[in-house]
Image 1: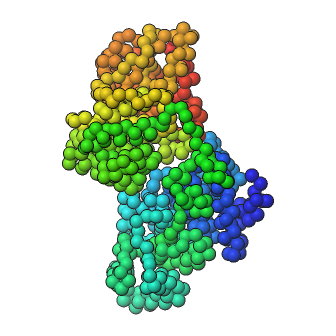
Image 2: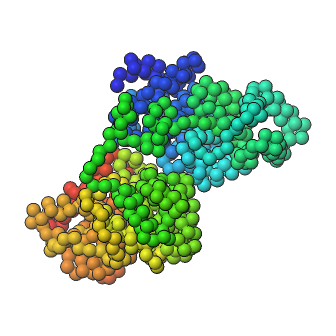
Image 3: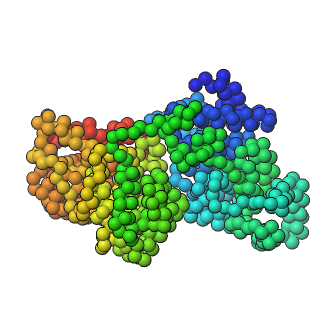
Length: 632
């Protein structure tokens, strides 16, 4: 990409200092070039697209007004931050975004000192930024500014409101920017509301207000407690006069907006005005997700992460044919089950399209519930549905389920509620990296009593497990499955019951036993076949359930084989391998066991194939483990 010729201003911006050296009148052109650069980059190297287009003007304004990286910007999730990366020294390597060894998929302090805090899961920006702001105050860094940028639905997460609540209870000068791209927060309309916005953003108003506050403090009429009460009273008066009130004002934060988030010069003006105001502040901006690229503006959900596309036509270059994605099999099977069982309902924390629950949403909207980015609530809400007699299928991405661990233990498992927890994106997910790999679910779920943990070998097994899980008396039933396509072209098998706690023999053998769980076992068939060609006979067992584990298979394996290999798409510590080793030790068996899975590291981003090889859990590693046993 010829930077300087195609992007004359952006090509000269190697850091935010270069941006700040430009006259303000050139900022709209910088925004245009930055938006075009993102569109061109993402068309050939896919990533999170529409959200970053919507935050271009905000990104430019922030780096223009604030002295980054001394001033701290905390982005909520990384979907909005591509422009931020490009302006902070990563422009020339942005073509490596999400590739192995390249630019990280989300902001990370390990990559750049402009990334103040890691952002992978939603709703953490306010809490993290508040910690940075309070720390700055404790160290008397009065000139350091901290800004949290939250949006793309993240305000629906409970953690965001916990941060807001605490923000009003401690000394800080934090600015929270709500990048509102179609959230359910009231908009100011009408002449009086516009007058209020103008008044609160005027230099004269704020100059008089601050002088009066200092004067009253000096003569002893105003202290912190009275100032807070006065702010609340002021907000109450505004609510009565202008018939508007919101949660930010109720929490004693000074509220500004909403303003046009695509007017970069107005954003600069507003940020200059409120930059040095004391106390917590909220700036509410309205933006359009996908701004500047018509197809993304029209269907922002589809263009959230569109893959390859043709810039001119807007055609998404989706590869069709072959096996279906596991998520699509889940979505279609859920609709089938809902037709058969009128108690079946679907629950998801803001992922209906991502997990294909939009199929149920479209056909039976009254039996579908999108609870927003609120994983803990999704689990407890599902438990309540179950207690009330419904049969909820709660679908959460595996790494996001970590946020609802307490809810699963206390509100579901402890009460033995009949609900199905479907963990999409389990195991290595690829380019989204360490914040999104579903590495830990097998290990963190296994110690919990009263739950069933399963993983299907293929798409037909997924259908059968779903059918089994929604039958009466099954309790809290977990089904984990990976991102991407399965292995079958004909997957619409009959819906049949699977015996809980029972695995199956995939292929018999005499030399080494291979125990796998989930679709990674299907992948390992290649290693089994290669071992056979080298004279090693492998018995391959699909365990299907981690809990209850099939002790009959383990007993058989212990009596027949001296050598055992376990394979799982999860952390090796605490998962299937650990369960097998524990059983052998507890029952007096002493086979040699080689456990293969994700090692004790946070796995970086890359293609799944690259990451399996790096983690030594691909077919080559499985074959090597089998042959080494034979040599021994």
